[in-house]
Amino acid sequence: MSDLPLLSWALVLAALVIGILAGHFGWGKRWPPSLSKLHPDYLTGLDYLVTEQPDRALDMFLKLMDANAETIETHFALGSLYRRRGEVERAIRIHQNLLARKELAPQHREQALLALAQDYLRAGVLDRAEGLFQQVSEVPRLRASALDSLRGVYERQHDWQQALGIYRQLARIKAAPARAVAAHYLCEMASLAMERGDFESARHWLRDAQSEASPFPRAALLSAQIALKLVGAAERDAILAELVAQTELRDFGELKRLVFAAIAADLGDAAPLRTSIEKVFSQDATLQAVWKEGPKQSARIAQEIGALLAQAEKYRCNECGFSGRNFYWHCPACHSWDTFEAYAIVKLR
Ligand SMILES: [Zn+2]
Image 1 (tube, helix red, strand yellow):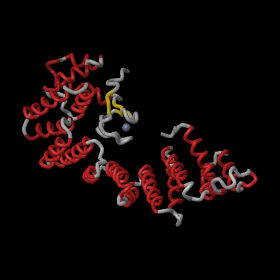
Image 2 (cartoon, protein in one colour; image 1 turned 90 degrees about the horizontal axis):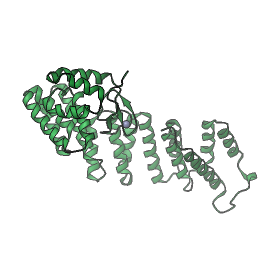
Image 3 (cartoon, rainbow, N blue to C red; image 1 turned 180 degrees about the vertical axis):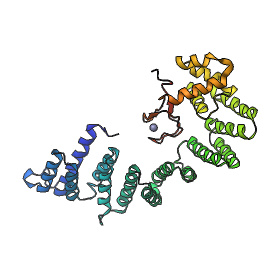
Image 4 (cartoon, rainbow, N blue to C red; image 1 turned 135 degrees about the vertical axis):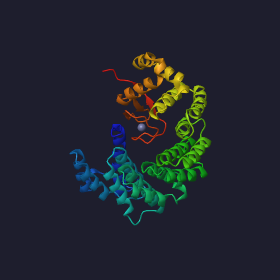
């Protein structure tokens, strides 16, 4: 993220310079200005920039550059560039500097509030981000963008109920992401309910999840766990058999995800998953050998494979590249859903 192409920097700096010049001399009046008429502070700012003192350069530019209609986009571009580079404090300074200007037009004020909220979100100051996104979501033209970011705030707080509420608001204005996202929120709520021993609520939310997206392996796996706990293995296996049948109609990636998610959910020894596990493991020489070693002891083998997997560095987010040992439905780094893939099942040492 911090390696934005040099070109972006060059473009923004060029825009900044043009903005400052335009602000000082007025478009088309005495353009181009002669260098001798440049404000000395501007040259000092350039000095700071070339001597790599970006904060001083920024101070100078902010002081020089009026936030008028011609230059406002440059402020926003610079702020967003800083944020994307992870230099959030600088982004915050730019947006606060804009907001401090009394003459700022209302639509620019709203845009600056939205940008500041995004800075806070990036910085992890979630309560401030939440308040600002709520405020901006009242502005019709920015509503979809503010609500979608607010959804992100609640995701990071693991407040799934609120995230789902915002999802529903987005759906009403036809700006919601895929329905699988809502199904994941419901599965998160169901998992928490299961941890509390509240299986009634968990089942209710899992039914809702499956009405959002079907087939939805995560919900089926959770249902299978509940069935095993409350009814028995036969009920669990019925659910899993149906899930496997549905998944096999889809692509191999889905089957792979199902197998690893099932193992992570401690369901690896269930009979209906056996063929699928074999199919997936046949891609990996080590696992295949372990698996074939004792077909009659599938429970033990599944356990051993579980232990092997626990030591392997094996999952990667195909959205941002984050990798680790655990299977996640929700990437802890980029917060995407359903992006985890098994890539190196076992590292040979
Ligand atoms: Zn990711």
